[in-house]
Length: 479
Image 1: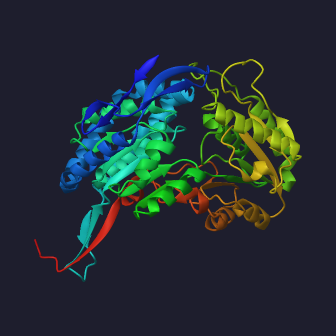
Image 2: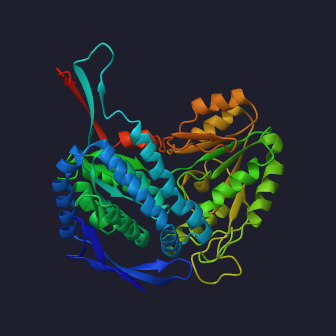
Image 3: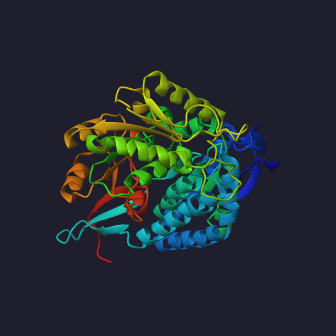
């Protein structure tokens, strides 16, 4: 049993002042694997006070020096990749190969992206070529509360910490209580990199406790939150009293539009993308929308692909999917699968219960529903598990209408050989991101959504901008 009851505050590891014990559960076995402390108000106040005290000095640190520290962090992070991967595999159930390549690898990708973007970022510049006495200064927002989820721990932590650090913000990180072990290792990396005291602080806690305390804290200038839309609404309401800047990266219900001329790998690509990380991704292509002329073939192919997706313990190497994170999520997914059956969707793969070879652990059968209609619950609610809904459309206009008929707007996908059609749909799909024909976004491309999928953008220069205020200065003296 791992015991990690300390927090990282003001450059030191300190005992919780008024914390309570919390058991971290290994979702592969359902057994406790660690004990952490959940902080209380005194711990939150101490972390915020440290960040506030460090803010003037960190803001005044030249960007080149801030970037150099992030470069050092990146090298230290690379050296801890295996530790981070093992922690994430244990705490949230990512299969170890996925944890090494994608979960830990995401942190390397984002930190290196911020370093390159920051080197080219004009933190101060003239308004334009004709206004030499007008200066634009991009200045840190201030003390930033960073609240991160369990499904992609290092992806989200580095997206926030990397951007805040180069922007000159000081930070209090509250990672998910479901995945705290990797966050504690990341704090060790920050400490080893030599960031000044108080620039980075970590307090473990849950949303109702430390999360709410940070959202309402008068000395916190900004909240950057990734998680559920429900929690995002609560944070926005709590932050409103102090008019904090609030950045939200929330849920999604991505549509994957497959036209008759899609490439031969499109269906398999869509199913496997849906199943990746056991379906626990906000940008998962969970609604596969198929042109009527190829619908039956696509359903058959998608079913066959899903039936070949292996399920197993996170500790085992291989290209299988692991468990979902906890019993609450498992129960929710089971209820939604049953709801799909009850509302008349045609179950073609998977279903309720665990896979037959597993009788313990929060494992879900890779599931495919066909003949799903827009009014069904599984077409509307974010399931956050390995469950794919297949829908039929007759025309491009109908596909667009159904794809946009959702409160979410994170990522949509298009599969067609028709370039003009791709461009038309990219302009009309109401989502922060559109990925087409299997092309992934490049490093530095902004990640974020519209509507109830949130606001703000993460990654590269766009992510840095979210942690900056814009100051206009008139009467600037020539230097």
